[in-house]
Length: 354
Image 1 (cartoon, helix red, strand yellow):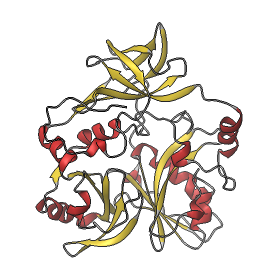
Image 2 (cartoon, rainbow, N blue to C red):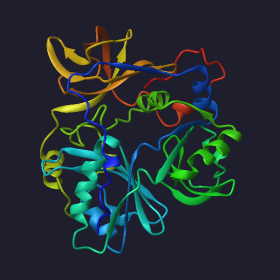
Image 3 (cartoon, helix red, strand yellow):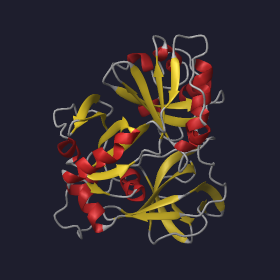
């Protein structure tokens, strides 16, 4: 059974097809917090859903690309929702707690995912809930994220999660690739944020957090990815797709592309010689091969972006976008934890950018 949709939770409008490039950068304070401390972002506006009931795993497993049946309580996974043609409806983080599956996604894909799950729970012992208004979500990014959250003993693997408290306030902590996230009741969000800042967390903007995401080469639905994207094009097969589980929506197309074909587009990095602006169309020679919506001015790796490009624009190729020249490169721009490594001299040039 599904909770009734709430009109106040309607997703943001889909971005217009013609886009203008946005450039994001880091303040000195944000840079120091991300590399050496703990940066805090309130991400409560992300879409949030929950599934409960004895058949919750079965229902979710039939809708997503990941094998949900293998997720134990206290663990989680990253997955995508697909159309029957294998194109993305959205992506989602799945966190299994003691009695529910907690999901969070981009607001632009929230309604589509809710609608898919609402159909999936029909006739099953499972209940679907919208949690966007009811739950707060706080991210801590940086090498001291666990220290500030006081969860140093929590396992280091991404998606590991557990109930905990922040100065006596109940919440749920989730390990991320760059720190930890904290899920809480919405009315407790500001109280928890105040406690974390008192422990040394430094508030930064969501735009500043995007710099870290781009450095690490992780695409975002609604920015680099959209409703025509297939997981293999975005390099998501290893992270988000199971090829051994049972049937799910879009499986046939995904499997056929993986075993018998090759994508026409591939997620690549772009390294710009100078800041681009205006039209985000990426051109290889005279041909349009992709689009850029967001560029990061990173102190570590320079002016960079992610884009789904036609395979003709191979790594090493020179392309043009927004009036600027860029080199196509393999991803990520930084590996492992180097995006968060503390640099004693913040003015030092980028190190290994492979």
